[in-house]
Image 1 (cartoon, rainbow, N blue to C red):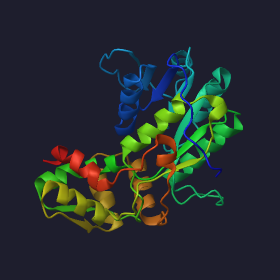
Image 2 (cartoon, helix red, strand yellow):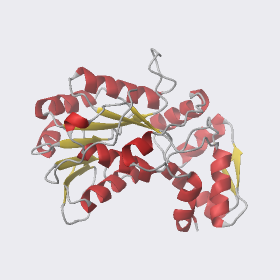
Image 3 (cartoon, helix red, strand yellow):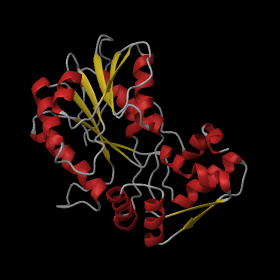
Image 4 (spheres, rainbow, N blue to C red):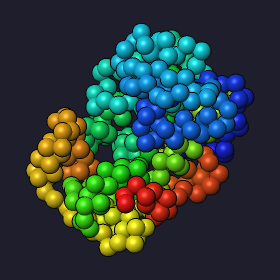
Length: 293
């Protein structure tokens, strides 16, 4: 990837569409755009609470008419694709190709550009989406994110109930603070097109962590001795299904835990885009400790 400098800010008159605006990352992106005085339109499955300068559109990314309406007057789109299948995205991409906004797509660091097929369904759909956007001539800015620190929120109930966090083990990754990913996304959403490297940017945290490492750092933030206990894939599957998670999602998560290779890659791309180094998971745990109490 070519070297890049921090992009030049665009005029504050830009209008930006944020998909997935109710999720852990989408909320952070909306907050930052609003704080910078940009006009923001959110597309999410449910209506958001009213906020100054933020317009909310409730609906589904697979509805072409809704997408067409949501894209009216939009200069840039922050795109999070929520499904485990890229086929329903063809209509969305067609609408994007007609209106031709700048597209910033949230992808995955686990993509192997040399592989004919990716390691698991979650990574495969990201690779397919990147290809769809490029094939449509949209020249998306691709942000390939590592595991988000906010995924640890899924352990909150177990942490409140005891000192052991159980789940399927996964390969170690350079866990990245979602606030850093949001800052990077806002930088490229505001950047002048002519000054922008389209990436892909590989957004990681500063250290490679196992799940046991993450649980240990969370315990330190809570001043408790927490430990992680890996469970077999079959048991993890049955527990997730019992919790009411969709079967297709459960199978994708199990495949990711079993098949995804370990990555020791740590990059400086967060710093390139934001002007500061990526934060640690330990810092994230301290900042969010109250959510686990």
